Image 1 (cartoon, helix red, strand yellow):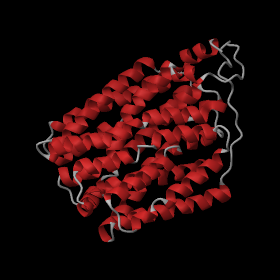
Image 2: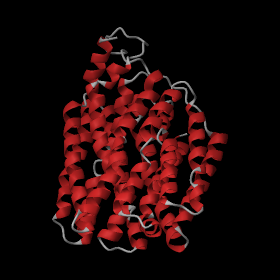
Image 3: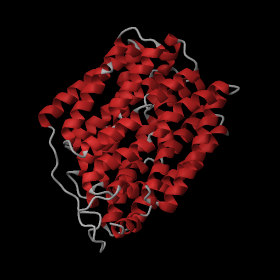
Amino acid sequence: MTGLIFLFMLINFADKMVVGLAAKPIMEELKLSPEQFGLIGSAFFFVFPFSAVLVGFVANRVQARHTLLVMAAFWSMLQFPMLGAVSFEVLIACRILLGTAEGPASPVATHALYKWFPDSLRAVPTAVVAQGSAIGVIAAVPALNWIIVHHSWHWAFGALGVAGLLWSVLWFFFGREGTLVDPPVAAGTGGGGGGEPVPYRLLLTCPSIVAVCCTGFASYWGLALGLTWFTPYLVEGLGYSQTAGGNLSVLPWLFGMVVVLGGGWISQRLKARGVSSRVSRGIFGSTAVILGGCILPFIGFAAEPAIKLAILVAGTAIGSTIYVVVPMVVSELTPQPQRAAMLAIVTSIVTLGGVIAPFAMGIVVQDAATHLAGYDRGFTLLGGLLLVGGIVGLLFIRPEADRRRLAARL
């Protein structure tokens, strides 16, 4: 099942990436300003957080395998209108609907995965599935970029629709539901809560969950910028061709894949050796985010395109382990019957960064003296946001203490 869920996330992120990859031809064909293109990037996330919450509550009661199938079939069909004549308004509408369909993807996929693995063994499977996003970009970018260059950006969307429908067929025949049930929150803590649900107000005000939301929000801001603006930065800002810029767009994902898989393995090894979640998840993941925030401000001081590219890749990718930490911390503190909804709520908060970031970058680029200066300023601001988010995580992600506190209040 891990393999099929991995493919699910692979296609999911290729869908997100294609707009940024085709930015230049889309902007030229539709005669868009940077601010308008930023709005297209943000449009994907307009309903994304709300659909994540709604479907998350549904997934508490409906088998995850059914939910995943419906989502994949729906978002695949939404790619095909791009094959015809497309206006700015049509593109906005399709991206909003696609974001609605894909918003619950990550929390529901994670919920389905955790029905197969206990808490102590979740870091590596979570990292593998999370890397469906990176490998989706790595595998899809050369093929999609070739379609964009040799045919048109319209056909790139169509190819993703076909891929999604093929996955839906595979999942229909081979998808299965896990049977593992987690122990209650109070288990092993001396609390008396037993199997009782934890009130959502306690979960949503739990310091560790608030902290992973803050750290995840900052990191997702960077992810949304990468999905929408990384290729335009290379092509328009640094002067690479569409072919070269498109192919180079895999670099943050290649580096991020190594970081996430390696970070997930290290986190799981630390946990297996008895190291606390505070250290193996909170401090470990947050420190990496802080490091990325320290690297990015140097992009404005570099003159050579290759050095700017290296700074951007390192700064945005090195904190990627946080995408493994967030669902594990939420799962550690949430009873299984409430897990899908809580993962969805946290995902909705984290992905609010995607609503704001692409449009904000478009405004910064459009208002700058040069587009390159605008890009550099936008990525420097991202560095500051990562620093703040990482420090919040470093100080307040304390799962063991918060688990005891929740158990005592049941």
